Length: 414
Image (cartoon, rainbow, N blue to C red; front, side):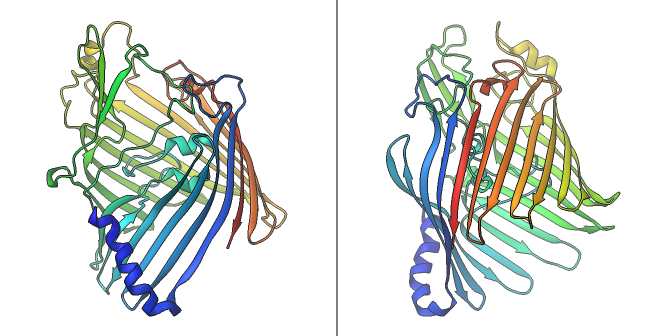
């Protein structure tokens, strides 16, 4: 874990010597979310509470000449589990020269052009935070990584190596009512890829402007972020092991102005390396994913954004043949449409927003309206809700049907 602590060691050594270049920012925040359906998950610890915490975030930035450091640390008091914690969300050191730069340490990545739909952004997410009504910045999870940027004349290149695997964080059964295909199997374990050289994840992004469009190519070699499931005995399972199959992704994106708005295109091929034949229903089949989006300002301070996303499963016949009797079956083409409406009022101190997911294939949905009011340059609060429904008990949003919640965030920034 040297890569985690190295930036901090450098920070504590370098910072005092160059104190005039250090800046300190952050916020104090309260964030609370409660389920409104009257249902509670069997393992609930917080009753109707889905999220409840207060936290102080400290962001320290500084450096000298070509070197800079940055840390983002949260000091947390959490109520559902009644504990206190410290979370190093980011901590890295940057070096920059004329033709290349490097970032070393815990950091977050944002690739691709989707709005809350991720094809080539293969880095870990926190969906529990997203469904709980936490601020959007908590959807991203930091990873210990090395990033190198190269800037020759014809294009720009970003190389990322991640030696320590980190999965997505999905809603847990102590906060959400989730679908479980094998509720009677209580013995379970999780096996993440060991931090070995052969398990290091690599990602490459090559990007440049082409005819006024931001164009990018992507390659990733690593693992699925969502665990697959393996049982000890398919006919009479007594033990479940969650694991992360190997995955490679090859993709592209384009984004630029069109018809007085912004057009976004993105695609990717997911090569599921441990089930290319598609005969293991526990491991995702290879897929081709595509996205088209359009965003436009219709009048002053009002914008609309729409997206259509498709996820096509390869080797579908083999997949169907591998399913055990009674198992839910995924669609060959999963479709998803999104709508985002944003209106600012009163000199942009009030923000009204609405984001919706709807799946034409699964017939389920999520609706997220939010009201945000900035009381001053330093203080704001937001009130919103997450409404789930439709579909079936195992579909992405349908399984959250009993988890409708309202949330509030109050923040003082300094």
